[in-house]
Image: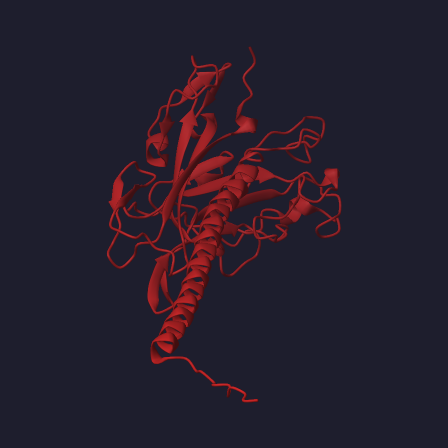
Amino acid sequence: MKTRACRSRGLTLVELLVAIALGLLLVAAAGYLLVSTTRVSRAVDANAQQQEAASVVLDIIGRDLKNAGFYPASFPVSVESSRFQGTYSNVVSTSVEAFDQGIFGCSEGLFDVANGTCPASKSTEPDSLVVSYFSADNFEVEGVGTRKDCLRQDVELAEFSGARYNEARAGSGAKGTGTVALPLFISNVYGLGASYTYKQDGRSISTRSFRCAGNGPNTKPHQPIVSGVTQLRFRYGVSEADTLEAPARFFTAAEVGGLPVATINGERKTAWQRVVAVQVCVVTKTLDATVRQTSSGSYVDCDGASVAFADSDRAVYKQQTRIFGVRNNLTRTF
């Protein structure tokens, strides 16, 4: 009986090439999917970070504006007048207008904490805001009536032009927790630092940082808090005698300084003392160098102007605006 020999058979050259091509195609598809997923993930993270930056800035300013002009009713204005309830007053320097009320601002410039003045305005510069109020240690709750400024510094040793205006008011109470003789003055300045540039993934990124300067003892004021903020604008709603403490319109800080004194409830008040609302506008940008606009375009900034993307910087820009009421200036009786 004869048996047939088994013949082995290999792949032809065509079949081998097809197999290699299919393998390369699968590898390319997997690589493309990985790169696309990474890009989408980074874009989502960058946009979330941008959104969070704007929210943090607005929340910090909004919370402090709730305190603007606050003076605890349980304290007198001075030790000598212990039978009378006190009100907000300038205990720093009568020659500095910024501390005459709980709200003050500078148009297109960063408030000078050393001199208590606004610099000469420049159209490309962001605005700055000064929020002042007094502590209320008797609450003894962290964050309520606290004697700390925006940088979490105790303000007992706060000074202006060499004078420590809070030292005598602090009395003999234990630092940071004890009972004070009189409420302590707290002042926070919000603005943006100078523009700076850094490298990421071979690309240059230019941005600014949201900063704060408190009146606690600090040799380096205006400490950075949030990066990626490129523009900051404040508008102030000023009430008039016939507007029932509703702002007739919103003004820049320079415009508020030029408004006349008005009499409300028989009391003469400056325009800054009549600020009942503050409109805050911020422009933020993505800081991830790989997250960019795919083509040329523009965005609308806080001044309502259309700004074109530069060829070297196609970051994603976003503008957000929020309006906050100034509670301690809403004191009209009806």
